[in-house]
Amino acid sequence: TDALYRNSLFETKVWYFYTITMGVFGRKKNKGKNNNDNGDELPPPIIKSPSVENGLKSPRRVSLKDVIINGSSQAGTRPDMGRKQLSAKSSLSSHLTRESMKQRMSIATLNLHGLIKDDLDDDSSVASEVIPSDAFTKTMGVSRHNSTLLMNVASSSIKNTNVVDPYNVPFESQYEPSEMRCLALVAHNHMKPAMKEFVMSHKEVLKKFRLTGTNTTITLLKSIFGDDPEVCYGPSFQSGPLGGDAELCALACLEDLGGCFFFMDPLSAHPHQADIDCLVRLLNVHNILTCINPCTAHAMSFVLKSALEDGRLDQIPSFFYTLKSPGVAVYKAEQKQALEAAKHS
Image 1 (cartoon, rainbow, N blue to C red):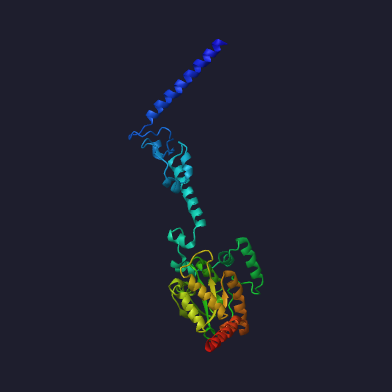
Image 2 (cartoon, rainbow, N blue to C red):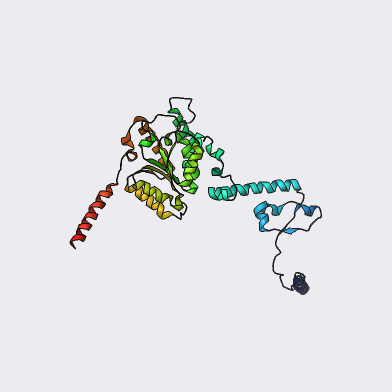
């Protein structure tokens, strides 16, 4: 028993001596050129570039650029992986990075970074025919499966089976554009692609009106309709932040605005928010036909077509008569009382 105890005690002392000795020498070995003691810090991970396998360079450290461009999975690259395999893996990771960026970035930001081509700068892409089944997907967020189902319902309701686009069936209007007030089309930046798809899928109805709107949207309309002699344009205005919305307010007050399709972006801040609020308020004050999202505009397009085709101006009275909100009469009565009270005070 005493012999076992002495052997155990000796082994313990040897273990302590070995631990202390290796700790001291290890710390001295890890001292840098500036004599800084970094023995307790783990060295950063390293990855091997293809040139390492050829004996050209020493292993390099992982950087943020490597992670962003080549993907973090390269840190575990096998030594036997050649240049072609590494290049393929890098391009795949880069492709996945671009796709993930596209899912998180807005249209304007994607154009800014060159990840997609700006549709407004390419007249051929804007003027190309829209795929009918994509109209619901791009303007109202409907899934492609449900969009196809909706288009099948629309196609089955058309008597002429040769019609490719059931929403752009030519028809004769009982009224000339000059006989009606203007129809304004306005869209915020992130809603302009939806406005483009909407116009292309309902252009047979829209071109029966005098079209007006803010600068960028009118430019978009002209690129879609091109030199179509049937299209009539009303007055053109500045871009929204430069006063275009305020000019539309003036057009409403001058009794020459019959309807407004305003695709508002509810998820972005706008520098001209006061003008937007003013425009929406005056559209309500003058009881002007207003659609503030793509779904409402899509549904209203069928009402417009029916009214023009059948000569039913009673269905769209704001394009022919000056209307007022019911609240206007109450407001005027209160103002009259306030004026009488001021006279007698």
